[in-house]
Length: 256
Ligand code: PEP
Image 1 (cartoon, helix red, strand yellow):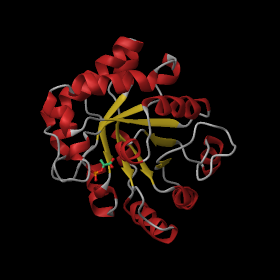
Image 2 (cartoon, protein in one colour):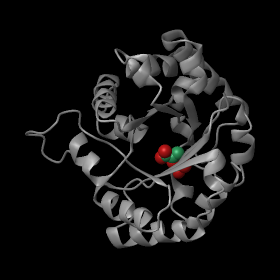
Image 3 (cartoon, rainbow, N blue to C red):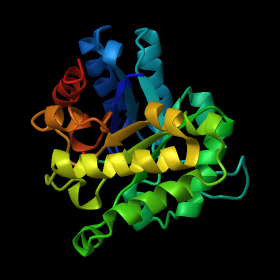
């Protein structure tokens, strides 16, 4: 079964509500039905922008998904500053990035936390986009595959196959995020293939064949085609290039 590409824009901590609505409208104005033949398109703005961006896409009746960039695993309670799965659900959000390296590095996100978040999201039918990836020190040490595959195993611990299939994994080498330094297609393919084989060991060949593994790290219109031509790279999680309508649309169109 051929997997459908996915292009997911991670807007990070950019765009006020007004700016987010403008960018969503700009993307919507460029939208063509033909995008969705080969590609699922998702944008992940900051929490406060989720509902306004979703409203733009609903009003224009276009099938662009909306995702959050983080969530808490508890339903509700004394977690000042956090957002719960039911809160996301009410915004109409269908996706949620978890385990992004910026959250792991700056906000103490752990493999255990990523696993709890994945389970809470799956229970509410919000699809997790689970980020994994190595630092430059780990790459230089030669332990990238072991490190990344251990992150994958930890993220999926205790998740059943019928739920695992709804997850997307994003391989994002930390040294390539926001640096302009992209992994070569061969480097990215090697890790994405190892991730898929870890999923095959855990869940069997069919789940592994169906699950999408994205690449993230300075993906742009100039390097996208070679990256997504690799057999185990099913699209991108995109930071900088998702903040401009022109480049985001070019990345989607590369999947045609
Ligand atoms: C990201 O933050 O997920 C990312 C891949 O960023 P960039 O595309 O800017 O490297």
